Length: 94
Image (cartoon, rainbow, N blue to C red; front, top):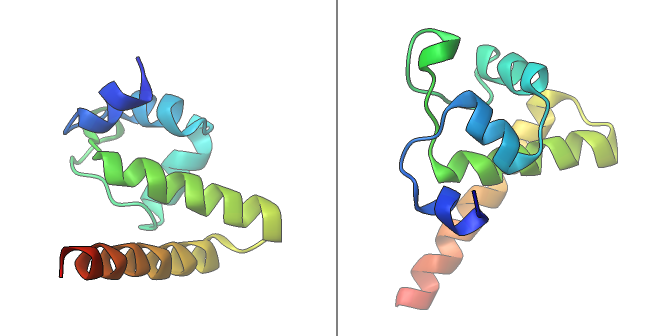
């Protein structure tokens, strides 16, 4: 599956998100259970993610690895970066 096909998909499973973001399954499960990466669905097998979560998960993983940051701090930085991306997109449309 190409990156373009993944990004066009509206709903990714846990395994698809792991593959798309090149992450370990246990890492992603831990971050979803801690509320740092949102998922729809009650059980792990039912979890679904959007393409936005690929970027968030990659960012968080990179921040944790590069700066030895706590997961909560990586999530906060990811929130700020997402907000900056949104503001830049609004400026381009204006």
